[in-house]
Length: 186
Picture (cartoon, rainbow, N blue to C red):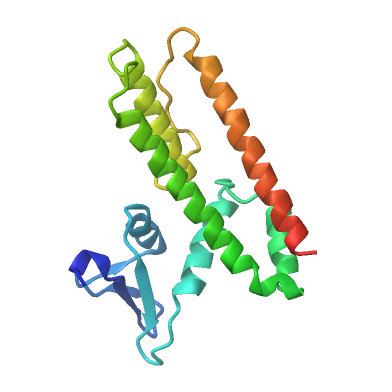
């Protein structure tokens, strides 16, 4: 396995400080979040006990982002997740969530591939700006980029209406996924 494919090993000392074993320095939760946004998997191990603390720290990172107003998880989804811990749906929820994120990543990859293929519209003025904007949006949707306050390039002509329709369609699909998740947990 190549070095970049291995999870980055972070050790937690008794003092609760987090130590990056590759760079031999201490890191913060925000540093760990940045590693993940850059596409790197991490594994956080308690130095003394050897316990894997990765899940605990990833949940803490999510909670901190949510508390700062970077809301990705709607309240109804959070409620459904809490409910799933007390129902028989618990065994289905992780697979459903994993499949949903896999579909989102695959859709992003397919969309990017379609935008870069030989396209007769690719040579039209403004198409490169639109492609870059769509790429930034897709990165934001998959957490590779911060959404709040993200600058947006001005659009020419009727492109804004098309993007608005695309956003409405994405919102509808997200609502459908949330409804399915709600039904699974009942």
